[in-house]
Image (cartoon, rainbow, N blue to C red; front, side):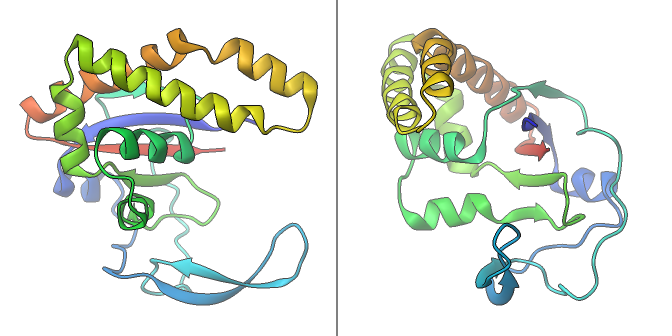
Length: 193
């Protein structure tokens, strides 16, 4: 099972209109008791949900609003890595990105807003800056991939995820950010399993 990832551009009010049954998140997260879905052990989780006892049933439309770009497989940790390289690597920046833009069904899809300051910096990257960022991002991602225990998976991922792969992702995302900003839109990440 893979992660489907799209990035889309819209205004905050258009986002709420597209997903009318979804909830606005809390400004600050709360800690809630939960269970690890794999082990069944009690755990503490972070929640942005203002009313976790009232789940959202409305999945909404089958995909993100348009305009969007499909960057299948680009997960949250890779985006957090890119945010750290381009903008801010603090825990606060990571927490800000991980705050859902709207609270939807627990099983997804999930929508995160890319930090506006990051989007602005990303949109301004030129060729030389993109080369520098792509090299740093490739290095960080390949270091993570090198930690995969399964040798076959690790070797396949290392072969598939070279500098060209990450530069292509960066170019698509930076070009999309530039277009979104020129239209007065915010950029969001839509993911589902």
